[in-house]
Length: 102
Image (cartoon, rainbow, N blue to C red; front, side, top):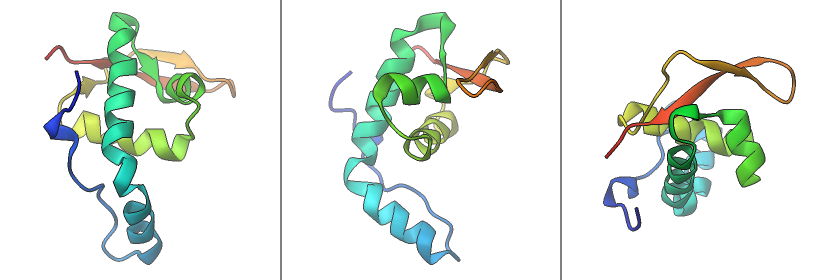
């Protein structure tokens, strides 16, 4: 999957929050690339899927970059949360996401 046009849109932000708007503007140039990178990682994991923490660790990204990208993928139906959970590096249970076949 390369050059996915569905990843070419601006990140959302809270309309009443200046810092949220600033963060969205800051990430906009790379959000589509990050979204595609996160989706490819989840796809490669197959039915095992990935937690947001596993994505962070494997792609060397922060949770602040990964969580919005996963939420965007969830919203647009590219990934789902099947109800599985695994432990994070911090010892907390986390939801697993898996890719929806395209």
